[in-house]
Image (cartoon, rainbow, N blue to C red; front, side, top):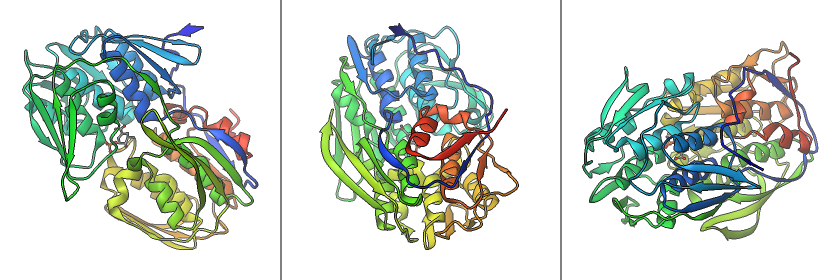
Length: 458
Ligand code: S3P
């Protein structure tokens, strides 16, 4: 069977709730990593020749990136369990004849702005209400320095139309915030720019763009100085060649069954083939410091990445202070960490969370509001969160069925459904459909382990 990546329409909001669960048991495989899946479609779609991808995440975000690459000339189809991509060749993307719709996907949108923004034609970017409210200036500003003209909504929001110069100018760009998306957008613009594009990052963020571009044959080098400052140089206009890619399981999706198994009594769950790239494992380090019984088994290499199987058992967690410098390696995991903290003995303090305010939702506010709605005491600071834990979950949940507002944010929906697995009363969320953006198998995998999660009756 073969099909194109356009079979995942966004559906209407669908409320759901979770209730006390015991004995989560089983062995599961988590779907592919979202960051690597986006890049597989992008780099495969750009490289010359054929790229084959196994284990690709088929969430709505990644599918949107696949559709955008098709509009720019890549041929993409699924044959059996493999995605097969025929790329255009570096520098040979075609002008899209309609707007590129990235739905909810910040990574797809921002990286593609870099990938195509430097081309001497127009491309228009649109997205859902969440993506349209997120700041794009962080990517558009360095692209402007490279000669890209931009028309965007006030505050550099979507919709935005980009038009590259005849020949883009290579730049040296110091990334002002800890952002892999900004780093990547500049590097990807550099692929279509003569000369050397340089990106300096003072705080290391996920390095999938660097590693994968090297794998595709780009002339990219990374130098790290004594203070940990990374200087990444890329020679533009080189050849990229199609690759075979095996996408490991997503550690950010792993976080949900992992925390569920820690907080639900008498649980013992094995999660196989999890990406253990050190730029992504901050949550596991933190949960182990909190007393989480997490065994890292069969540590091995898969396609140039560290992977392992994780055995997770119910644990008595204790509150800790999470070092702020760990934030980039667990940036998407703070919502679910806050749920674990709700069941820990004592206080958990998380700081350095300014970037959480500009994710799919203002996650700091969404988490604090949802915790309070469900009887968990917390203090929301400008860029910090303190959670006062209560291991037995007494009084947690919302007896009257009031729903957590998820603001089109998949991780808010999944986090609060996990909170409900050990709470006295049910925890309700206003929309479980958003989960499809990153983890369409969430409901089935969780209920398969024994989690008590249900959709509300229509
Ligand atoms: C991502 C980078 C991070 C992360 C996002 C995926 C990536 O965003 O939150 O889910 O694949 O590059 P920022 O670069 O904005 O921190």
